[in-house]
Image (cartoon, rainbow, N blue to C red; front, side, top):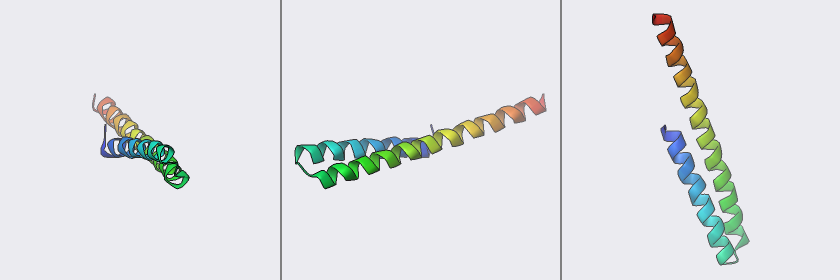
Length: 67
């Protein structure tokens, strides 16, 4: 797991917490802010997974060429 994956998961979790806090306090602005933050976190996590998979593929190709 790389830095983007960890940060993305953390942002998504913070967004979920804001959504719950917005629901409990009847604050639709806070809830909406949480939805946006959660989506941004999921996007960052996905970008991190893609980066990791590409790096692994490059490493695999390099290892195959060395053999």
